[in-house]
Length: 640
Image (cartoon, rainbow, N blue to C red; front, side, top):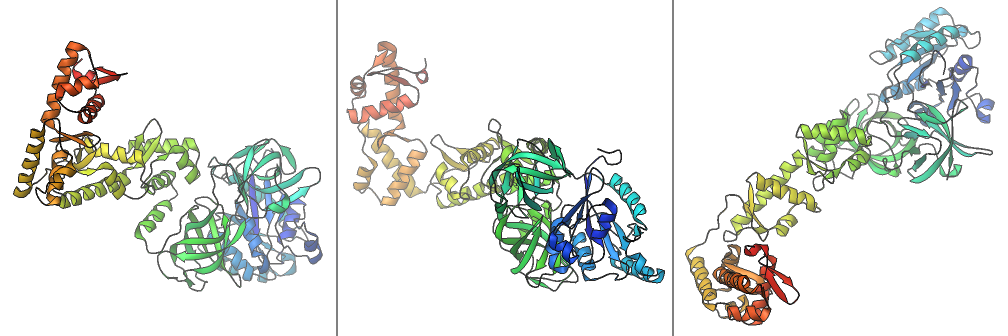
């Protein structure tokens, strides 16, 4: 690494065709960036060219012809700053303006304005061109940019430009590293003896020789066989560097510009992406569902743009949008994009991707719009919080969150701890590392309380709703761990109460019965008290026609819910007093005899085996007895 350059910088060119961009790069670097035979024959750049300015700076030459703007976009998407080139003899031209709009849409922050071909004109013409450039760049990132006058023929101004470049390179901050490797592909070729080579600018993370990466959207794993930076072999490469990467596991024909190689397990191809779109003032109005060309990273994808806040976006307006892609693509939160009309292709707007892996949505949804507006801040803590807010039915693990928002695990874990401390999210299961949004907890709480209110209104004689029925009334797919957590949380906060057999009610709810029901309750209770240990089944009482069927069923439900009647299993029901009586007899027997058989218990309560065995099994379940082979002994629930 040289003394001047302590980091890797990528510089891009922009400007109209035949304004001397390629010649300028050759003057600066000694390298002709026009690498294709047809480019040299026609004297016109048709694709991306590359040259090196010192050890750690790459200059990307982009085509200026309107037919090749898609290639210009592929090159401009990864640059740190721009050489904005205007020829002195032509001045500001159509592609000068379009390239300038593209640079603004991609939010390029810095640049140098270079006026070329000064050897062909007089000073008066140069002054006119400078005035036109000043008008074009007013109130933009190039408004106060340095201006250098050069001639690629005489060499005038080249040394001054070199010194200015070194100064700007030195002042340029390195690209922010998110810690997860990602590199959009802008070139792919085959080298004899090596195989497939992929080239591009590393946007995030690091890789080394021997690592495995994922080719996307193909979802194909590749092995890194070798890495070159500026034609020098290196063991690893990181954020901001242009690299040529020799990979195994894929043929050149399987890869195209716009593909991405990335750390496996984080980036997912998607057909739906949500973002914020600004429509240029020079653009015609844009109708929702228009077919457009979406330029994302180094790729161009056909898509429909769904405007989420209105039906038609007017020039100069901004809106949240959803792109419905015709083929899957991969990007990250915060990636810039440019859109062009389908035919003829003209740049009309651009913006930022907010959700790279979205679901199909409709417009005019206030909740979704608010969600996207929050993500637009691009604050990692906000993005993590919103990811949890979007998961109503499932608690999430740190690994899942990290994968979904494309942030390193350690970063997400730190953010999670911060949000837990602020009570923005909470831990549902510490052992399994499950986290849930407090906002969603409140929403589910309110749902549960409303369900219980309605249930009590419609069923005033029932002690509560069965847990499973309550769970089934909540949003489909709700996680069992989450449901149990919320029920316990509501119990601890005295919002609800539960019975032993799993019925849920509001904390202050009390069963209400009228005179008619009360009379039937007392009648059925007397029947079971009098029956002792040879009790009738509920069905047989209904058949006795002691009252309307619905009234009898309500009375039974009430008696069972309030534990006046106890279903010990196999349809056998006893009055609670009889169960207590049998328990006392059983305990006294075991205190004396130490063990009991079914036949002995049958005789003890003067009942048949049909009634005695289910009751014994019930006592087993309560810990009163413990079954050991053919006998039962005293359990801990029996006072031992």
